[in-house]
Length: 322
Ligand SMILES: Nc1nc2c(ncn2[C@@H]2O[C@H](COP(=O)(O)OP(=O)(O)OP(=O)(O)O)[C@@H](O)[C@H]2O)c(=O)[nH]1
Ligand SMILES: C[S@@+](CC[C@H](N)C(=O)[O-])C[C@H]1O[C@@H](n2cnc3c(N)ncnc32)[C@H](O)[C@@H]1O
Ligand code: SF4
Ligand code: SF4
Image 1 (cartoon, protein in one colour):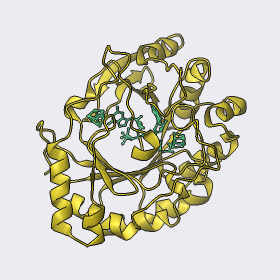
Image 2 (cartoon, helix red, strand yellow):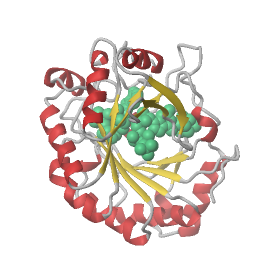
Image 3 (cartoon, rainbow, N blue to C red):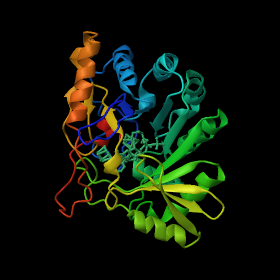
Image 4 (cartoon, rainbow, N blue to C red):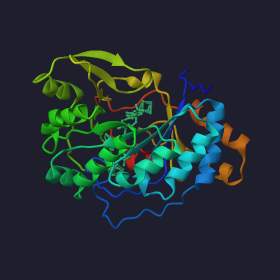
């Protein structure tokens, strides 16, 4: 079992397999030109796998592959199969923008992937194009359809931004509901890489929009997940991730590994330690020691709820994988 410095049980590893992305979302990496391709000193899947085995042995039971856009990394299905073959029964999931999913879904499912969380910020082609700075909607919807068709569990993530897609909360909720998918509305988390002056909808504002049409009641959180859940009268459940109001850090169960091997204890802060040398050398004991050291230093909580408006995270979501 992995216990951090605040007594929290850490059982969830998020692995970002690349910083690269085929979108330029306003809230994530809007200023990078599409021609920008970060020079990544990527860990190979074999090196990542060595760490994954260490982490599983120490108590990790949930693994999420993210990015950047993880589907840009060739042979991702093979990496997923390596993990699944090593240990079945893991909660093995992916977070993707969905653009390349139509082609990949069947292979990922066959490799052992169980769930995929897909970002869908709008159902209007022009609004989706404004958010991602690229014409994406048609391909994303095709990716969603295919993921459902092959039997993956699909969850939708939406980040409502005032003046862009905030008026579509109900439509996206109904789209997800009609297809039997969960949905979470995520408050925009300020960080220095996002477009300046973006204003996200608060969780309370999202609730008020949904309440105009539907009755629902709060049912709390499910385990250590950051989403607060709400149940509609017909039993459909949606979630809201609102770090500005709620301190879900108190039972945080997660750590993050970047594509270059930085082990990050918290989404908000810059602190990290590298596992690169250890995995290059195949040093299992060294990798386990770094994991424990990072956990000893895991911060208590983020600062998005701070009253200080100058508190902005400098951690890039596309590096950490969100
Ligand atoms: N502040 C904060 N936000 C988080 C954290 N984990 C996830 N989020 C937010 O939720 C977004 C989507 O997370 P996902 O990649 O779908 O993963 P997840 O919420 O763990 O998904 P499930 O396993 O399905 O519950 C992230 O990109 C963040 O914006 C966290 O530890 N802290
Ligand atoms: C960094 S992306 C990586 C995976 C994939 N490219 C995608 O978009 O789903 C993971 C999640 O982070 C969320 N995200 C990115 N920047 C964010 C921000 N500033 N505030 C809140 N969520 C953010 C996205 O909406 C997405 O759901
Ligand atoms: S949120 Fe995901 S899809 Fe959008 S730019 Fe960031 S990494 Fe790419
Ligand atoms: S902000 Fe940091 S401490 Fe809070 S839930 Fe996210 S990773 Fe955990």
